[in-house]
Length: 330
Image 1 (cartoon, helix red, strand yellow):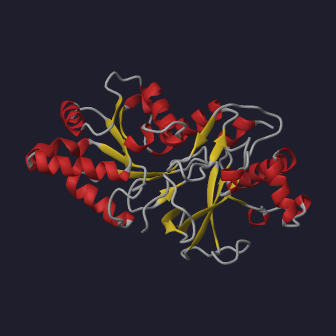
Image 2 (cartoon, helix red, strand yellow):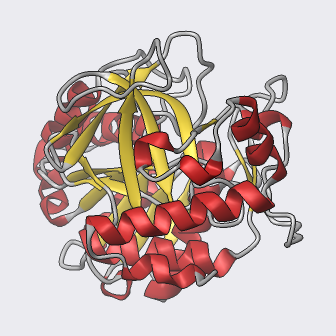
Image 3 (tube, one colour):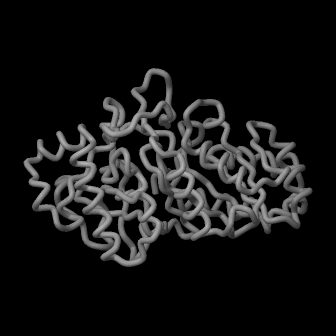
């Protein structure tokens, strides 16, 4: 199977062909997925459309190794959470495939990583091992190779001073939601309104995740607070999770776009085998063809809806436990 061909997908027919090929490969080579498909009494030979493909419940990553039988690997990403929680593990057989997915998604929606300075305000992820988000930002920093690249934990004054020095540069700040709000509080309590004007050229990419650190708010409320407080309209969002190797991006209005090798489908929250029409809220299914060696067809516990060629994330199904990369309820 030619793994890198997924990055050459240009049409819906290309995507369908690649998805069906991936489905058959994973049915034959990923034991847990094959057992799941068989449990549903689905005949793989009769799967000829996206809606006929079974989507593996994302919870399976908590209790099983979802991995191609033809590969071995010690590299895995692990969801964030407390030590008492049963955390998801996603084993990564081909980190180069993940890195190419990172690069091409970023380039498609934002620009070439080499053109930017990358700063990370990701304290909850830096403090834990096996974070796919930290791996992603590390990789973008490596491609950028700018000496100013770096991470910040809770040293908001250092971040503020650096941003002030970089006001004429192309800078991207990746930040977890609660940390961005903490930084904003610092800016307004320690600095004058006038001193924030340099932030208008900054691109902020929030990655979701309040993790019980602040009062819950809708995504739209969060974006408005950040836009007003940081005096910039360039508050973007990134949607991914431990179990994925691809990222969707929102460049505003809480509407996300997938790269060509990723798709969102919205299933009925009560009937997992039925799908909702455009504009109707349901549970999100994700096809991520970069997950070649695990499972590309994942039923998440996020709620959302399709809006034209974009999608919105509207929160979580109530009975699911909150994961570190889940987005705020909207």
